[in-house]
Length: 175
Image (cartoon, rainbow, N blue to C red; front, top):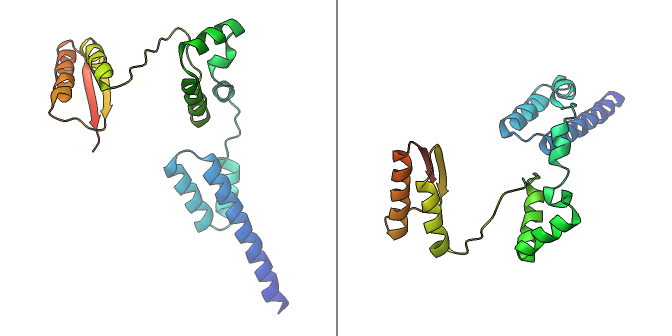
């Protein structure tokens, strides 16, 4: 009877260890294939998989790039005067989106870039097509819908002009 109860305790401890390691993998691995592979190794090779993951699967190298990436947007690194000038350019809702975007994907914003908000398709499409038509190297375009209508024809004309300029065109159409 004591043998069975000791196996029950060992089994419960092993199960707790497997769950903890699985949670660690899910929280720290970004690549889906890697995550599935590590979880499979941990669960299908009792104890050995856990030891291998602890030795080889945990990234212990602290990179300066991660520090830079997580240090906040460049907006916060501006001088007080520069930050005030930048905040005057756009409404408060725009800065809320920047902060939200930074929480989802931390990145530094490069200085010297310009943004011109184009509110709707009537404003945006002609400008987008003008810039596409000027492309000399490459055009990468992702679109939810591309119909054979006035807007679609504008884009196709611009893409043809870009290819005539020598640009490589890659387009992804969803839906």
